[in-house]
Length: 320
Image 1: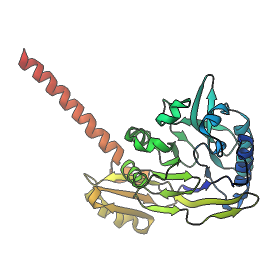
Image 2 (image 1 turned 120 degrees about the horizontal axis):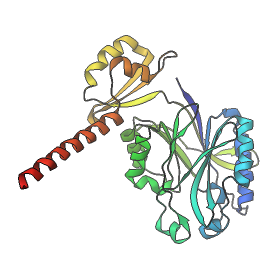
Image 3 (image 1 turned 120 degrees about the vertical axis):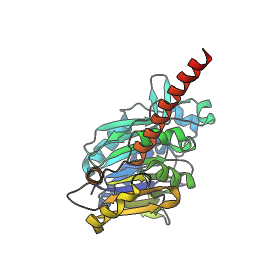
Image 4 (image 1 turned 90 degrees about the vertical axis):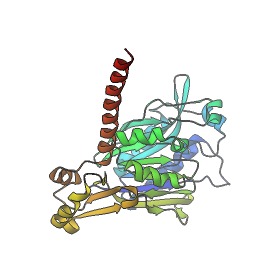
């Protein structure tokens, strides 16, 4: 099993405090240290958390480079806690500003960055540029993807994360996401963790809520924070029932309580989770000749393209 301990941290600015990047960076540092008892593998903060309390125009003016002062500050905390952090900020790169999430690993190194693929029109009017890549980050626990707020409205982002084989997707946001979180997790086959100042939610590939923020928590020196935390087993994959359904009885007869198969017959899919110490879900997949959902869908697309290519050739010959 690959168990990831994940914490989503909603960190609203108290009305008595004035927002600034320096002040908010210090609060994020304090929040991370206060989470030591959770022994987190991943900590996520809300969208542009570094600039809470500032207007968007002011935040654009205060955008900082990556690496920069805040990444340096939180990198030290990551190393102390041996945890990854999703650090959302406005990033200045030469003459452009991006709505960015920086992923820092447990050694304090910048593993990579994700730039919001689809900013809103008002963001772009205030100087925020769109990102052009949807990367996947390899960590010791699994493949990590990131999307930001408005990205959730655009299926091409979720599809790219799925085709990149993301297993756990973090979604810092200004809005709560609603049912799209559940449909993304189910249709694209990954866990998704949302994070906003109000808190967040964790949804598994069944499309079910694993954990969500219900009551605020007092963090020492910070006041109210909205925490969501859970242990997530990343050794899980999603499969279509086509060609795979008839293999399930023998699989379950052999492994029994060592696996979990969750059937979503109305959706035509199921998930398979390994609870075994000596076999991964990929091992079991290979043993029983299963084809995962993403591979099956992409194979169908490739078959269609080949068919249409042949048909186009026949149509051309007929015209001649």
